[in-house]
Every structure is written in structure tokens, then in C-alpha cells.
Image: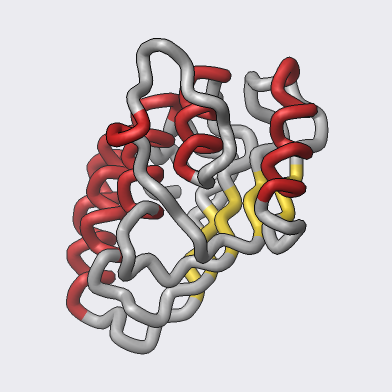
Length: 156
């Protein structure tokens, strides 16, 4: 199991040899916001990375927002992202939907503050604390012309 301490060593290794890396599965570890920060810094150097699973960790809102910053990069190659069961709340889910160029901006978010992503085709947000946003998730798929599928099973 990889925790916050070991994640930094893992990320250093990813940076060194990730030129042909296409998929990373870090499901069921103890990654928190700091681990996600280190991971996004490492996968920046992985131009072929199309699938990332960070499900069943503890990334919370802070880690979700860090992932959004990575997703907004023009060089982000990710097509599939699994963030299921990470204690993400509605605040970060709104930011994530805004980054996917859907969510109507609230008073505290300005349009220039919202980063954009056009590459994702699959996003798993199942088992997060966003049960009141199920309709918004479906609208996000529709707005993207159903080129993005958002999984949202068993929301809390």
C-alpha cells in the first residue's frame, strides 16, 4: 500500500521512466492531497498516459482541485480518470464540472478562474459525497455531446 510518504518516491520513479507509460492504477492506497500533488507533477512528464485510476483513496477536495489543474493543461493526454470513493464533496465537483466546461458559474467563481478540459471521455465519480449533483452530472454529459461518460453510482 502506498501512503503519502511513499507516493513521493513513486512519483520520482514515474518521472524518470514514463515516456511509454499508458496506464497507472493506484486504487486502494492511502493517497491524500499531497500524494495527488506529487502524482500530477510526475505524470506531467508522461505524454502517453491515457488512463489513471486513483479510486478508493483520500484525495478529498484539495486533491480533486489539484487534479483539475492537471486536467486543464493543453498537454493532458488523459482519456479515462477514476476518482471513485475519494471523499470529494459538491464544492470540488462543481469546480470539476466547470473545468469540463459545463457548470453554471456561481458567485465565487469567475469564468477566467475556471480551467478547461476537452480530452476526457470517461470520468468515474461514484461513491463520493455529491448525491445532490446527479442531475448536473448527466447534464455535463449532454453538454459535451455525450463524448464524455460520467459514472456516478452509489453517491453519498
